[in-house]
Amino acid sequence: MLKTNDGTMYFFVDEAGDPIFYNKYGKNIVGNEGCSKVLLLGFIRTENPQAIRQPLLDLREEILNDKYLAKIPSVNKSLVAFHAKDDCPEVREKVFKAIIKLDFKAEFVVARKLEDVFNTRHHRKESIFYNDLFSKLFENNLHRTSKNIIYYAVRGSKDRQAPIRDAVQSAILAFEGKWKTKISSEVQIYPQSPSGEVCLQVADYMNWAVQRAFIKGEECYLKFIEDKISFLVDIYDFDKYPKNFYSKSNKFDFKKISPL
Image (tube, rainbow, N blue to C red; front, top):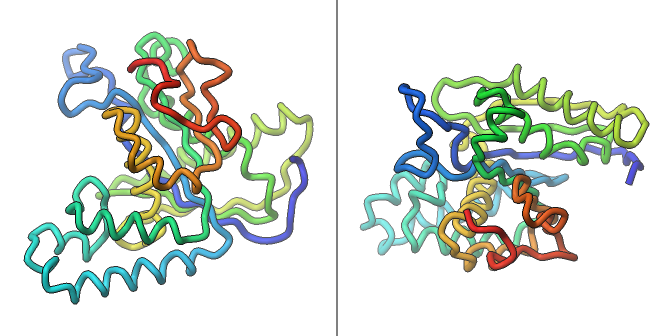
């Protein structure tokens, strides 16, 4: 587990849900319309991002030339960037079928938005909550290769590069403390828009499939892409601990989790 291999690993990180707990009046609104019950962070990792980008670019060209799909208004947005929540079912099916043929693995941290955890562990600060999950997502990954390049999705003008760099450093320190060793790997971090990086669109689709399983109990999408998932933790499902860590040896099933 502690071996570091020469080479470069690329990580493409996106989120689903939000870190919000309270409205402007201090009222807990978790689960209300517009405020998610969970915050989910996930990445896809690969040694060859171009092998992911090109098939998705080819798919976009196929959709552009599809006379049937051209009649669907949302397809114009899909041609800019695939986004699972907004893509029409016909496009979504094509993207999922393309994804399962690509060479990558995915990992996820799902955090139930528990008020007592937020207040005590995260001191009622959304930034601490978010960055704590980011740190946990990478805790056991940055020692594997000598160079790690992390792209994380940003939308609008929000730039989180400095706090995310702190979160990555926290992940390194947590790993070093756990294993009593030093990580010498190089880490580079870059913000990127999903429209500018196709691999982030794949991460969006993977996150959406996991989120639908947790929030809606719809496992069909997750089951379709489950071979791509190497690790998923429902981190605050304390009733199921230590069985809240899902992998190939303990595959995720909606029936295994505590109700949200």
